[in-house]
Image (cartoon, rainbow, N blue to C red):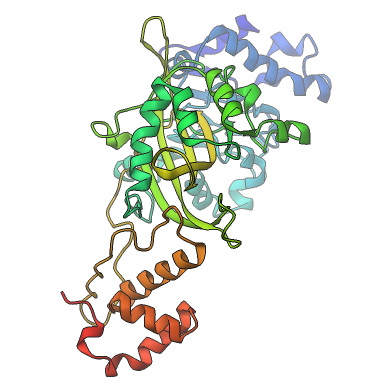
Length: 457
């Protein structure tokens, strides 16, 4: 097979010619395609040989940019699907003169080949059976410029798609943390995770705190990520990816509860170095919101107490301790639920979920315009935002769930109507704390409200 691949590879064009495989005498004489069973094993074996020729993704990317599978009597891509795993970054693909009857025949590659520039489908039955197939193909491949040698998308449109631009602009992160509890936690957590995990676990985690990690091996990688094969050996045995685990004991055992258990699992993970939160802030996306109904450690509130949910997206380097050099870069998503407790600053980590994935860059959260909380629509000028007392509408140690919900509703009504927090609270109280009913009541009474009911610009 290696000799055949060498014969069919054109280094000048960076083309791997896999057309007319069924009539290649090297295989037809040996009966490779004599039965369906033998035929189905051929292409995966061929791709495994390619994996031995090219040792890493960068070599494949540089050596092969075009592949032709023309004239192979393919009724679908099922038998050749391994191509998308071995050469996922090819730019030109020729499927002409096969037996592809409809889009379902190639749907297996709908989410593959994310850098495809030119696709050839001429000479297939789908050309007449599905007259509008071109429209669907354009949706499948956002960087495709040429279809059957015809220009179908401009260079500007391709550049926009390559940057991950969406019809709806990416908004800035939403960080609601007037009391700076979440901000303080994040600033302390990640430097400590890099330097002293034992002290960190002891300072924020208690006997009821839980931690889990999951490895997402199928997450897309950044286009400019040229790292060689990414190994997950240091994490995979502890991964609680529920999409991959089928046995209940594994699902249960991979939730680590209590300070000691969390400290011990952290000690087995590779050493890390996160970007500086101030000088490299573009590498971070951090959001924070209040969350009601957390368990009350004191047991005084049956309905629970308020807390915060902090969602962090970013990257980190795995570090060789002996040299201090970075081994590789990974991306992560980490979600913390914070509540009142006996930890640093009077808070504790209720739950900590860490998701690891290949390096994906930071373009997904680069703002494209807009704001996280657009001002409410109004017939006149937008209402002035209310003066919010420190800590109002945010979780704080000891604040009950009921009180937090009332403050949040008062803030929402005030922002939407322009009323002061005092009048918003009165309106909600008269509406039995039903936000929708309070909005209707405001509409009916707006003309009769005194000037002091509204915030002043």
